[in-house]
Amino acid sequence: VDDVSLGKTQILTVPVAEHAMHTGQLTAKKLAGRWHHDSCTITFSSSGTYTESWTDMGETLRGRYEIDGNFVITSKHGSFHYSPTTGKLVCIDDGDEYYK
Image (cartoon, rainbow, N blue to C red; front, side):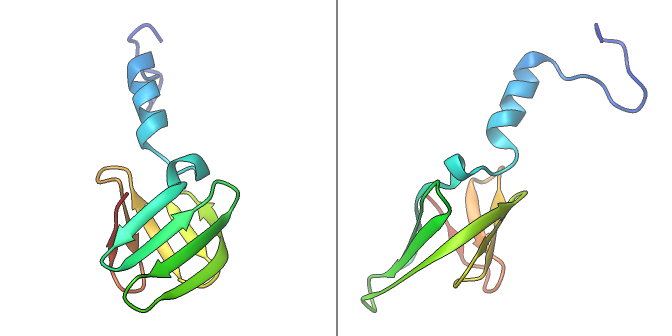
């Protein structure tokens, strides 16, 4: 506190703490919206559901998801990792990168 180290950790300044809140752990609010990779679009809602569409195959899947830290586990597609650094979702099964 007041720039004095508290054991192994140190209290962050308000601007640093605010930045961490906006770039750190994935939330349903950050995830909500359309994510794209090639001909696939996944639309996540903030209520825990998603729609996955492929324009080249004319196929659509619907399912549920849950967030565990920076991981998204879906009921049909598999799992994703969210990178706060790049802002991308990476499919753990095939390495495909999705972006907003």
